[in-house]
Image 1 (cartoon, rainbow, N blue to C red):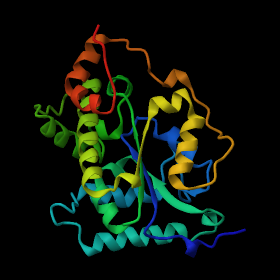
Image 2: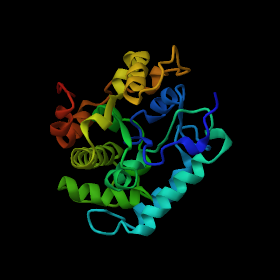
Image 3: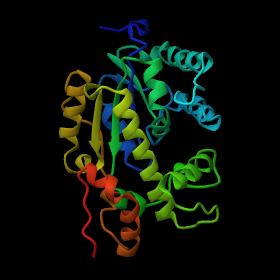
Image 4: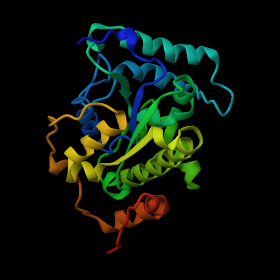
Length: 267
């Protein structure tokens, strides 16, 4: 039976986020195998591209509910964007709607205010394995996101910011520490525990079907018997090639990482 797009509850999206490079593409692939509409334009990383422009505009203009800058204009733009996305033929035959974008991490309070019945799915990954891989736009200078995020991240971590720093693992670590600290605080302040599901990247690697079942239960959607997720273990970066770099990352991220059950036995 078809579901008309206007039957969607505009106030109740499923918002999927996680620091870029955490494996959010795999999480998006799992969610696309259930009865959840993530948008009309989805890129290879599984991002809901119809949200990128608005999200980046808010980031560039430093929009913040806490600082009183989240005006009715921005609230209207978010609602209007959502209405435009779900009022399409592609949105039909789905029981719920949502969006996946790593940079949603910067706007949890604002999203919760505009969409008060929203549920959040947040992906996390061991900071060492994440930091010793390639950089992400939020940990790389020379782009619209990293140029804003990295200076704030270094200040938050109490470290001197050097715009010429070429140590990717340090930039990655500082970015991970800043983003996860901020989003953890925002979730605690603005999101009820029952409306938040935290998924570990490592659990997807071990048993992605079990993770999919937990997603269906959280979303109250019918369980699916299988997904089309193919895991490339060569991208998992589970082996630590430089323990010196790993130690440097752990010095920045270790205390926060322990709160999520992560450990590192220094060599």
